[in-house]
Image (cartoon, rainbow, N blue to C red; front, side, top):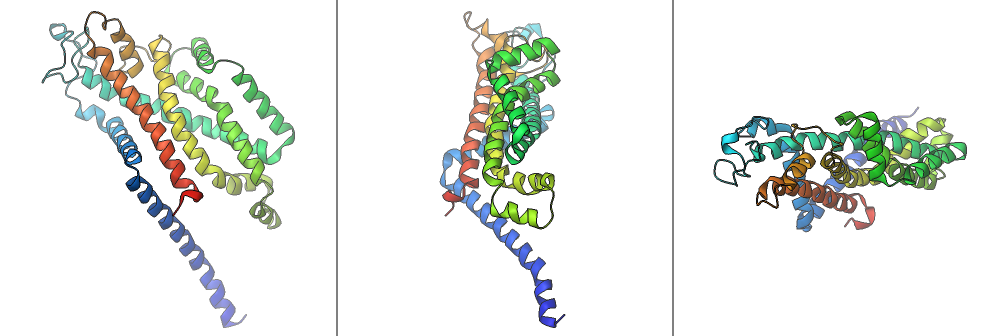
Length: 304
């Protein structure tokens, strides 16, 4: 082997690494451009950072124990001591709203991760292999979509029990058709692409190609869908808690707090339901806007 060949071989890994670094740098630069050019996207990412901060550090920054009641301060409106007021048991609503952030975020992240792992992989298998795999995944999706999704979640939680684990499972099940169909459509388009044929020619198995070639190429689209679904997962968990099938009191959770305060609105204690409802609205609003921003970031046609 000549010295020229050795130089070419030695340069190949370095050039490949340089291309990856250049691609990452271009993506980060484009992301900064999108966030800086669109104030709404910047606000959504700021809200997301705030939610993550509150979910992690909430128990250490709240001024009161969210479970401790003090009837002497029951139904107090917002004031300098209790920023969001107190509920009918004298509990600080601000502390309960902050603490509820962790539970709702855990439900959303866990359910979305579960449905991505199950629905995404099932959809990739259906689109890549086709045949009976595609038929089975399609029939499962059609069966789930035959029911109103929230009613189906109610039935699952009512049958299994209203625990956090069962809420996560129910939320993942009702979102399965969405992930499976997106992954199926994207995988079926890419299964005959040139880079897939090249991977076959190098001796890779179909399973390896599906997981290491197809999955990374559809991952940006799935990430956008995950951000959108997280808002729906929070809303679904809050809805289940509102009707009594979600998290059990006295655990702080936005849906429970809205349900507990809804009966006091007529008598004038509007703050009990207002602030948890605003937190729920901001979280759903945040994830929907992040989905739009991620779509702009990962879409090659929007790059400048």
